[in-house]
Amino acid sequence: MCGLFFVLQRREPIDRSRFSRALNTMHHRGPDHVGTEFHTRTFQTDSGPCEIHAGLGLHRLAILDLDPRAHQPFSEGNRSLVYNGEIYNYRDLKREQLVPDQTFRTTSDTELLFKLVDGGCINHIGRLNGMWAFCFFDGDSGQLTLSRDRYGKKPLFYFLNQDVFCVSSTIQAILQYLSLRTSFDTAALLSYLNTGVMYPGDGHPTHFRDINQIPPATIARFDIRNWSLRSETYFSFRQEALDAGTSEGDLADIVADAARIRLTSDRPVGLLLSGGVDSSIVLAGLVKKGVQDQVRCFIGETGRSEDALYAKKCVEQLGLEATVINMVYNERAFDRFLKMCGHYEKPFPMLGNSMAMSEMYEAIHAFNVPVVLDGTGGDEIFGGYWDRQFPFAVQDAIRHRDWQSVARMRRSGKAFWYELGWRRAKLASAQLLLAIPGIKHKSNAVRDFCSRDVLKATSRDPLDDRSISFQEALYRDVERGRLGEWIWHNDRNAMMSSIENRSPLLDYRLTRFIGTGAAKKFVGQWNKHELRSAFDGLVNLPTQWRVQKQGFRWAARRFFRDNKIRILDLVSSSKLLKPHVQVNAFCDAARAGEQLIASRLTPRLLCVAGIEQALDLTGC
Image (cartoon, rainbow, N blue to C red; front, side):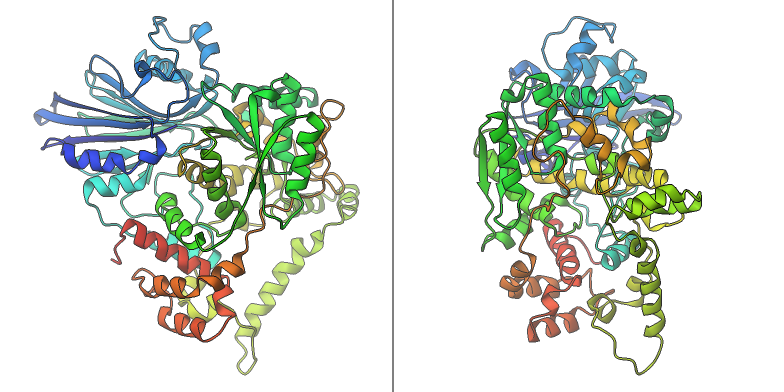
């Protein structure tokens, strides 16, 4: 795992001092080596000869082939690659002679990727099993090739104007190099203040003005002569589900192999064992392959849920050792939050899943384990959300008059009638009551202190359209919804501590199971039934048929009350919030009482103010 940085300029040379400072902001993403390379080439354009200056840099976290021969930029002649990620099946692809040139000087996946792009085999990128974000500079042809993996596990941002094309693993490095002052996209900010979530999306625009991203599952080509960028997708989740047949018998085999190949590493590998279904299924896959001894299990203990107890039962049953990390929420929590703002570069829900994991990865770093597996993706692919996915399954059954399925769903014990209709009716009636003068309403901080623009902002949650089918809901959540949000959290939390995060359940061979239908995913009281049952009779762990994981129990109220003064000082200093929020009134009211500081509006204001400070954003 690494942090890459690339600058292409015409009219003036690369400022190497500024380039180095920008690159060094990503030291945490790759502390093992830093490499830079600079080129000056002249190309013929429609306006005549034009001198082009290129700079490539990379902070490397060495995982495969630790020898300096595998350092980056990886170059041959005037062609160079900077690459962030891992190709888990690269040895198999070598044996299959995927690329014409079979003279390898390293044992790294970087060289295979270099030869794939350099040899004109970019159309074979769909055969790569892994995660990646890369930038390939061809100083002979005058073309730049960029790509990102199917799910967007690895970030790739860019800035483009008529003189500069700047590409980076982080937004901060771009801002640093260009001395660029930016701000939030207004629509994105208003939506976040209203809903509390800012999804990364699957298009080129980001939540910041002037900053774009290469979308997931995309190959982009930049023509230096014409100074133009064009892109195309190479993978469709919908098409994959249509093209690939599924059989219940091969699910366990795919999961097991997905876990096995993610042990590909020349350094120690760990596993986050959460006490839930997904990470336990990953462990079961490793057991199925007989390689469970190749991982070190880490269990987070908060003392506020049964999750750690279940995780411990799993390792005890298998005779494995586990490292238990006691999670501590103390006076360092606010400083940790500020650090997260600088690394996240985007507002985030202040939940246990995000807040606790940065502490978890920091503790794992002390054990010199730079690769960690997790269970990300199980909920989105196999149906893990009762509140988010199940209502669509109920709607589909009613829409098709499938009363037998409706009867089975009622027996699930879930309040699906509420999720299906009563919640929306309740919200609609509440909106009507607001218009009646003289009625006293329950306090609502978002309504009381935010502008009408915030209250009218459109939600960017792709599942807010309740008219769509269950299947469409799953596709949308994978492509531009909650999965992208969790992936963003995982990458930033892990890389804060120089750790590479790998997710076996995001193996592209499992994407076909997105389309297997609600009847296989929700059965009685069980969600993810298809995934759970795949290991019946193979590796039965105590968590396999656990009804519901509780998740990290983060002491949110304690955090806001213990850090009240610092929180309000930071929020009151924000320039970005004041056009949309009555900041002074909010802070005065919060100082005067104890309830408002723990309202749902506080973490939203705090995140915006924290990122504004960390990235030195402008109020314009």
